[in-house]
Structure formats: C-alpha cells, structure tokens
Amino acid sequence: MNDVHDLIGIGVGPFNLGLAALAEPLDDLDAVFLESRDQFEWHPGMVLEDATLQVPFMADLVTMADPTSRFSYLNFLKQVGRLYPFYIRESFYPLRSEFVEYGRWVVDQLDGVHFGRHVESVAHDGELYVVRARVGTETQTYRARRLVLGTGTTPYVPAVAAEHVAGAAPALHSSTYLDHKDDLLQREDVTIIGSGQSAAEIFLDLLTSGGPRVTWITRSPRFFPMEYTKLTLEMTSPEYTAYFQGLPEVTRETLLREQRGLYKGISGDLVDTIYDTLYRLRAQGKADARLLTATELTDLTWDGDAFSLRLRHTETGEAFGSGASAVVLSTGYRSVVPTFLDGVRDRIRWDERGRYDATADYQVGVEPGEVWVQNGEEHTHGFVAPDLGMGAFRNSVILGSMLGREVYPVETRIATQEFGTPSWARLREGAR
Ligand SMILES: Cc1cc2nc3c(=O)[nH]c(=O)nc-3n(C[C@H](O)[C@H](O)[C@H](O)COP(=O)(O)OP(=O)(O)OC[C@H]3O[C@@H](n4cnc5c(N)ncnc54)[C@H](O)[C@@H]3O)c2cc1C
Ligand SMILES: NC(=O)c1ccc[n+]([C@@H]2O[C@H](COP(=O)([O-])OP(=O)(O)OC[C@H]3O[C@@H](n4cnc5c(N)ncnc54)[C@H](OP(=O)(O)O)[C@@H]3O)[C@@H](O)[C@H]2O)c1
Image (cartoon, rainbow, N blue to C red):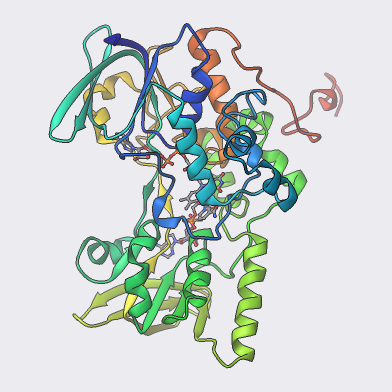
C-alpha cells in the first residue's frame, strides 16, 4: 500500500462516498476515505420503512456529474434486478432504505474506502497531513497532501433538554428514533418537539403504530410545507450559489433565515398523508393526538416518572404546561467543526464566527490546493449545501480544483431566471 496518498477523505456519508466513486476512474488520484462506522449508513435512526428520498433518484452519488458512471442508481437497480419494478412504479423517489443499499453496493466496488476508522487527530509535518484514526483499540496513521472534510452535521438538542437527552430519562433526539421506537410504543404519551420532516415522519409513524397518545409541538406559527415549486428549485442552481456567495455576509444571513421554507418544513405529500390519517382515525374514534403551533418549550423537568413541559405561546404570550412520559426532540442538526482539526487550526480559513471560510471551489485551507469541505459551507454557499442533488456538482468542482483540469464538466448556468442585476439591464453611464 502506498503510504502517502494524494487525498484523504474524512467521513463517508453520501458526499465523500460520491467523491470516492467519481475519483475511482482517475489514474492520477490515489485517494483513501476513512469512516468511523463499520459500514455505510445514512442517518440510520431515521430509515423508516416507507420513508423516501426527498430528491429524485438522479441526485445519486454520480449521475449529475457523469450520467455514464457505472456507480449510478440506475445501474445499481439493473445489477440487483430491480430496474423494471422501479420503472413500473413511476416514482422518482427511492426508499431511504434502498439508498442505503445502493451506497453499500457502491462501497463494495471501491478499494480505498475504509470503515471502522474513527479519525481522532490531524497534524501537519511541514509537507503532509498526518491523519490518525482509531481502529478498535489501535491507532492507524495515514499521510496525504490533501484533505476533504465530509463529516456531515451533528444532532442539535436545545439547552432546555440537553441534560435529559444525555441522561437516563426517556428523552431522545430524532436521529436515534428507531433505536427507541419499541420503548416509545410502550409509553402512555409521547411529545414531539419541532416541525421539520423528521418530526412529521415520527409523528405519522407513532400515530399509525397504535402506540401512545402523541402531542406534536412546534414553535413555528404553522406546520409549514417545504416549498417545492420549479422556479424556486432553480435556486439550487450553480449560478444562484455563485450569486449568494458574492453577497455581503449580513445579507447572506438574512436570506438564509428567510429561505427556511425552501429546505426546512414538511413535504407537501406528507402533510396531506398526516391529515388524511388523522381524519380517518377521528372518524373511527381512534385519534389520540394533539397538535400545537406557535408554542415554545421553555423548560423540561423529569420527576423520575414523567416529564413536565413548561410552554409559552409565542403569539399570545401565555405560559402553560403539559406532561409526557417521553419526549422526542426533532430539533434538527448543526454544522460543527470537528475537534480532530485542533492540531491544524492555523492551516484552515475561518470566518469571524469560527466557521469555515470556504472559497467558491469549496477550499478551506490557508494554502491553496490542500483542504476542501463538503456540507460545512451553508453560510457561504447557501441552503443547498446539505442537498443530495448538490453532491455530484460540488464533487465535480472539488476534483477540478484539486487536479487543475475539468475532470467532469461543470454547468455554470442552468436556470431560466437571472439572479442579481442582469448584465443586459445595467444602466448606461449618464442614464437615470
Ligand atoms: C433523516 C435525514 C434524511 C435526509 N434526507 C435527505 C434527502 O432525502 N435528500 C437530501 O437532499 N438531503 C437529505 N438530508 C440532508 C443530509 O444533509 C444529506 O442527506 C446527507 O446525509 C449529507 O451527507 P454528508 O456526507 O455531508 O454527511 P453524513 O451523511 O452525516 O455523513 C458523515 C459521515 O462522517 C462520519 N464521521 C463523522 N466524524 C468522523 C470522524 N471523526 N472520523 C471518521 N468518520 C467520521 C459519520 O460517521 C458519517 O457517516 C437528510 C438528512 C437527514 C437527517
Ligand atoms: N425522508 C427524508 O428524506 C427526510 C427525513 C427527515 C429529514 N430530512 C431532511 O433532513 C434535514 C433535517 O430535517 P429535520 O426535520 O431533522 O430538522 P429541521 O428541518 O431543521 O427541523 C428542526 C425543527 O426543530 C425546531 N427547533 C429547532 N430548535 C428548537 C428549539 N430550541 N425549540 C423548539 N424547536 C426547535 C425547528 O423550529 P424552527 O423552524 O422554528 O427553527 C424545526 O421545526 C432537512 O433537510 C429535511 O428535509 C429528510
């Protein structure tokens, strides 16, 4: 094995796995990828039986970069004998469980992707990055000229609930829902906090599993749907990302807050399914659910037997309370800088708030051509950063900037609309 690699990818979620698949045919790039988990997983606590991807199958690991790649989702279906059923099903949206199976199928065909390697530290010896990974009780050392950081996001738990999620009381983050589902079904009443896709999927799952009474609480003024209209989808285009990146930081922050409904919220279909299910259960006299909007969780206490929730209505200002025998915090994820970078902090570009300061081609190294980041650049590149549909595009850009040539053609303009001031509409000098 070559001891010095051209590239080490840290973390193997969909984004770095896509990079591994796109790098595989390249003779001039020796890449290794290190992943803590023992096999490819994709948010394992949320692979509910009937949950599907929220993006079409073309947002697989490679297609948008290279539709002829043998690592495409369609080739996976062909090889496992399910292409015709997928065709007849006529839905663009694979099951989340199928996507995991697809990822493992890709992994099986790649040499450089190593599981059970938890990266603990990164140093620089003056010439190379030195990456140390825990493998069981041992430490393995890898060296490379370049790094691609792909460690994803971290479950976020509000401070009022943090001690309970970390402790023995039955409070959990949605990312571990399936690990606790059997226990939740034995409980009398379960409260879900948050109204993103995770909360909605868990609400429906508990509702239809014949288990506890479910209380669903959001601080948002309504259970809002994720916007999925076509002109808005054009904002996932490379040119919108480039436009967004060129805006002042304060404008980007404002826009990101305003754009919540483009990537947060519940898919419209799921909202309808939930309503139809509630309708049916009510007609049958079986609905045991309570839904509260504009309601903030201000305190959470556990008396050894049950939770007490202190709540505040954000519109009326009234404080009130509720009880629960278990709480599911479906409160989303945050981008967190991994501590393994502590030893090379001086080699990374940071913004004033300690976040990665990514360049247009996703570089975060002080020295050009050394370090790239995937899915840690929402504040610079926009809401599309965690979108699977963006993965192949970003990997094309990363490979191009790494190798100094266009390995996979990169689209620069795909939208019908223009973002920012169009060049044809600029005022002529002297015009008012
Ligand atoms: C439940 C859920 C469903 C989603 N569904 C969709 C969807 O349908 N469509 C969509 O566009 N987006 C979806 N998303 C958004 C999400 O951003 C992407 O799906 C995707 O997971 C991002 O991939 P990633 O590679 O950045 O990170 P992740 O998938 O989080 O993978 C990061 C990997 O890095 C590993 N790692 C972390 N630290 C270390 C370390 N120190 N050493 C080694 N390995 C490490 C982790 O174990 C993990 O496997 C979903 C998100 C969630 C939470
Ligand atoms: N099937 C699928 O493909 C699937 C399944 C699950 C998730 N996903 C995707 O994964 C990503 C994450 O989804 P998610 O639902 O886990 O997270 P999310 O969309 O970020 O939603 C988090 C929810 O928690 C609320 N929240 C955050 N902090 C809070 C606090 N302190 N107190 C009370 N409420 C708080 C938020 O409220 P505010 O809105 O008021 O901030 C929001 O309702 C999304 O892109 C989603 O589309 C996809």
